[in-house]
Length: 302
Image (cartoon, rainbow, N blue to C red; front, side, top):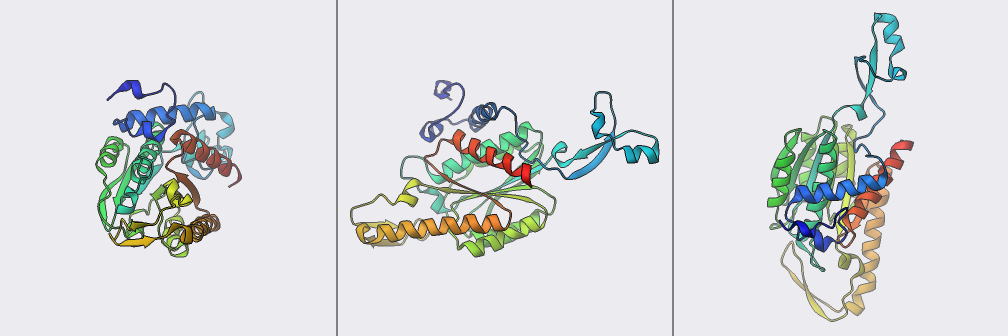
């Protein structure tokens, strides 16, 4: 590990991130820089839902004493909320072949791995339980959330490769049965599925009381389509080659992509699911800072 590659406070360039092989160091450096920028550590699983009582101890804020319970029991108890208790963070990572695409040196899967490591580190430093599931055409690995699974999660990320076609909807349907306990469920994928069908597959997670976050990871070229020479384009999932004349197709393609993104954002908003589009050229600390700031604002109004 070349420690001189770490620029002191925050990583900026995804191409620099790709040269850092230690995912835990990468995550720690990015997250600590983001938290410093936010001035306080946002609890990723923050909630105002009541969870349980615990006995009063010296130094507790008396404003949190349950006085009604005191009147019944003549004993002091503190109200605890979900934000005070350990949460489950479950990352669902798409490792299908389309995630291998890279136009500027950092693939979607590499970027997704950096993002997953940062989110897991953020939760781990809050003593939450973390877990991960990777999938392509089937479930590849499943590590259930546990306080002891952070290093296992990092090892799973380190080994993840994009080799097979994907079946996102089928895997989401299958995995929904595994998340009956309230968790923060984070889906990281390029989301090449029809928006209505995708949201229908995600909704059961919300119905189960889970807090669902969707990170839509795309390469800049998938959005801007910067090609101008006639070429043969290869479908990474199927291997099929398609001849394309960009000047006849580019504008229609860009419009289709923007409509797809807009539909995903709107469907997620309607279903009270967090949605964030991130391009792989975006500095990771900026992406994380923007999302956590947005999440903190949402928590104030929910």
